[in-house]
Image (cartoon, rainbow, N blue to C red):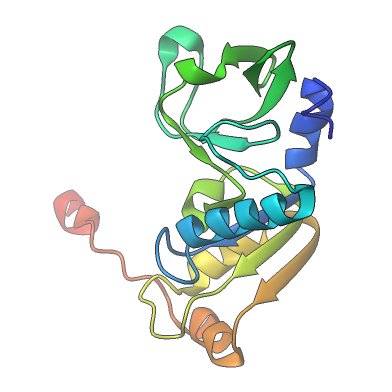
Amino acid sequence: EAAILGGARAAADMLDEHRLLCAHRRGPSGVAHWNRQVERWLTDATGEPIWTDWYAGRPVLVTANDYGRRLYNGDTGVAVVRGESLTVAIGEQEFAAGRLSDVDTMHAMTIHKSQGSQADEVTVLLPAEESRLLTRELFYTAVTRAKKRVRVVGTEASVRAAVGRRAVRASGLARRLA
């Protein structure tokens, strides 16, 4: 509602209330699936189908640095109504929606991309226990994004796998420093 009424600050503040975090980008427990699902729910709730990439309230995640515009990978924003058009409020700046190319919809985001950010409440969607991404470090990163409350959605086996599996680092840095 704030985005429709042009309240850029209020709409942006709402982004920090809740984050939906996924380990994967694709698949049934991935970001792409959940972004589409949330947009279907929005269509059902409002009766207004989402026909285009840009709509009031669309949360966005900047995916590449644009030093000229002072936009950085990981910045977040929201599309808001300004008169007859949409702008995207990112921090204290606003941009014409059609002029931003390196952004993704952010109803859901990967745990990896969430590093460095926090929200009041976080919902973590765990993949199947076989997922190689499911590690203690990833799980820790996910649950520590929450300021007040965390909700974990997954099987007991997935939680056990996450807590019990350490990430294997293969950078070769130790060998190079020796």
